[in-house]
Length: 254
Ligand code: COA
Image (cartoon, rainbow, N blue to C red):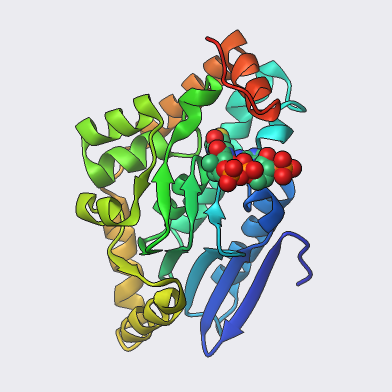
């Protein structure tokens, strides 16, 4: 399959999907999301693929969020639909019957943190940084972040991270349970493959049932509420000010 914003590679049953817009810190625009969805659909169908790694191109970022520049092209009343679309793609990742691990190699912010959290678990490089900075833009997470971050790190820390928009480093992310291992940049993919190779010695049927059972822990209603609330803030003046300020490289005034 030909892609323009992601790269894919199959190496003895392990399929690596690399988000590939390093000049924009791998921000998720419409094309990236469409291509990511196509790649995940390929994972469901292709019997040669038994496990997946999702990572980012370059040394700086995993994914620095949804593409903020593209938000200006979306109508005020299309926010909820935008969030729903992103959530649906991330559900395909989360519900994938084959193991999907995020190898977080730099900034994982906003939609990037949400993408990492939709994966079954995460490894991070020492320079990785996690955060949900949507409040800086007059927004809230819309691709499942309000739900998955709360599940992963607990309500108090999730509230703090989403209300301050602060970033945390890899070691703190590990201490909170957001990532399972912290590795040097060079060792990030080898360690991820080592873990996947161990998983691949187990029963694929049993692994798929682990994924299915664990995912039942989630309450779908929370995700629906997030879509609605994202739609509400998307049409606000604060969102206009926040996104404009980012693109004009200045601080927003709310
Ligand atoms: N959407 C669109 N473009 C983005 C982006 C995003 N989420 N994140 C970074 N970029 C672009 C920048 O606009 C810049 O483009 P330019 O070179 O054409 O000006 C380029 O990527 C490099 O980013 P820059 O901000 O110059 O790098 P930095 O090292 O100074 O800062 C970050 C890195 C991650 C702190 C900063 O880019 C940032 O805050 N990004 C937005 C994070 C965010 O709010 N994500 C949630 C979105 S909902």
